[in-house]
Amino acid sequence: MPAPTLQDLAPDGHDLATDPHSVYAALRERGPVHRVLVPGSGESWLVVTRDAARAALTDPRLRNDIRHSATWQDDGGHALGRNMLQTDPPDHTRLRRLVAGHFTPARIAALRPRIADIAGDLLAELPARGTVDLVSRYALPLPVTVICDLFGVPIADRTVFHAWSNELVMPASPESGASAAAALGGYLAELIHRKRGTREDDLLSDLVATAREPAAESPLTSEELLGMAFLILVAGHETTVNLISATVHALLTHPDQLELLRSEPDLAGAAVEEALRHQSPVHATAFRFAAESLDLAGTHIPAGDAVQISLAAASRDPLHFPEPDRFHLRRRGPAHLAFGHGLHHCLGAPLARTEAAIAVRLLLHHCPDLTLATDPATLTWRTSTLLRGLSELPVRIGPSGDPGGTD
Image 1 (tube, helix red, strand yellow):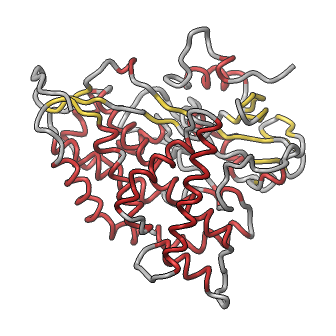
Image 2 (cartoon, rainbow, N blue to C red; image 1 turned 135 degrees about the horizontal axis):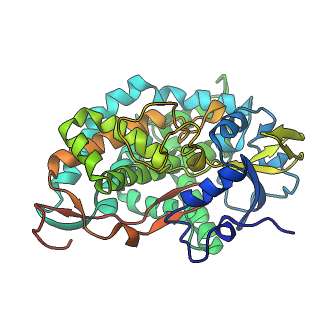
Image 3 (cartoon, helix red, strand yellow; image 1 turned 90 degrees about the vertical axis):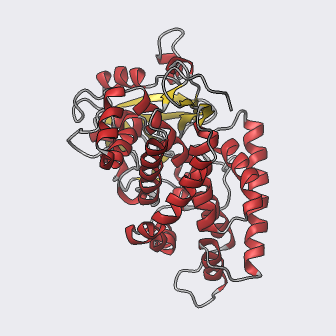
């Protein structure tokens, strides 16, 4: 009998994209690991408790390289190059070392003025009152601008770059995903070619220079260079778009916590951390594959089987997070797993945290009367195997009761 999908496990008529957490809660009550069918990818073991998730994230027998999969034939045509999410030590260690220096707390701290300037410019373009979509007008352009600045993507190319990126990570269909992958791959290859002809002060130029140095300690192959560009550019903004919009959404739908943050603006970082736990932008890890048979939280995992860790489910485990469905800025207890754990802990976590905290703090300062402009139940959540985020977030700017205009 084939394994059920998460939708199969949901009550009839339940919108899984809007509320996956009740389904995860039911699974957690039955055990930490479950066999499920992932549409488009096949059957996998899904980990839904925090203890089992931490164990899986640090188990060296679970590998990221798809060639450990029992059913592997090829990557399906959607992977661009070879990147850190697809590799294990020692290749993963080598690749991560090449870029880790660009994401240290000190380097990110140096970016704070630029991030604040970008946010300020975007806020200045909003109307004084009326209804706007906060995703397209703020949560999206802020991280796109930051990561494209960091990577040296020309301003004229940024809109189309994001369109390809968004379709690739949350495709409307397999065909559209494949088309976006081909277009983005071609664009990145051309951008890399342009960088070879000039030396600029950006991360991609540094990586291109490393790939060209025969004497370099850890040179990049052409495939790895393409994969690195793809991973950092796409992961460097898609998840942060979701994080900013999810944090604002959580605050606007929890007015007591919004009022607390307004009275104590220094809690902006805490709001971001709680949003990471409560509405994990990275919903689950990339698939990992059992290099050998193993026992995971009492479940036998045969060699070659796929395993996926639900970061969203693990971060609402009631054994570790009392009242897990409550959004609470003063929450105490263990850390969430929204950025993963272990070797593959998100390299860009410091940047995402900084961008989101600045974005939220400046938004609330600029828009002191900000409210949600629609029924929360009508909002559309986009999901993929890995990510979850709002497609739009209509908000009203101006005093309550002032209809303003619609932008």
